[in-house]
Amino acid sequence: MLLIEGPKFSGFDFTPGVSSAYEAQGEPFYINNRRILLASKQDSLEPRGDGEQLEDEPLSHTSKTAKSVWDCGAGQGLSSFSAAALGAEVIITDVETAVPSLQQGAHLNGLSEPQVRVRALDWMNHAQGVQDILGSLRKPSQDTSKKTLDYILASDVIWVDFLIAPLVNTIAQLMQISNERRDSLLDEDDTRTEAASTSPVLILAHQSRSARCDNMFFDSLDALGLQRKKVQLDGHGTDEDAVDLDSKYRKTNLAIWKVWRE
Image (cartoon, rainbow, N blue to C red):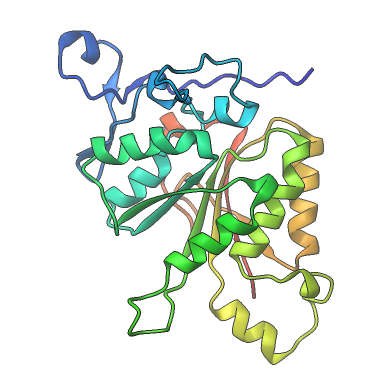
């Protein structure tokens, strides 16, 4: 049995209410002076054909985890809505059953397309989802060029071993690493240089729960020829990527990694 430590983001209130009952749930969560709101867990239940909603049992494990806000800021689109509050154009992805809740969250935060788009992406069957995401980057029909993904934000995505290979394959496709080139990425050639110049940077917020899962994931990234480093979070040092993260968000088993192609 895999035991996963539960979320501890209870100190913040993401609900849209303004009554004292809501305020008593915790401190409002602000990014760039903008309060971030999330849909209730009830909103993320999958609807039946007759309009009723399913209880928790029929939902998959991945659907259930999408309903909570975890320590790394993952769940219910929190990191995506925060990025949008900072001015980013964001494509939010999750399994199909989580899409209605993410759409509701976007509405609650006054976010709409094209700044924020919600797309279904299942790592276990990612081909169509990745194609839709990359296709959505195309500019209007009179211009056949494409925008590029600048960053892939991944928060608390490593928790069970059977999802690691599908996750890495999805990341590889989003970073435009073809299946044929995965075993030859270390070869120096013009094709690799050109692809790397347009490849997004992966920003990974990671809570370590299993050394085995961690090793599987990072070994897989190494096999793709990707570079990585842990971001310094205490604001000290000379690393240009270092950040001064508030101590209330820092824990011994939480880390932020930067992953890129050279």
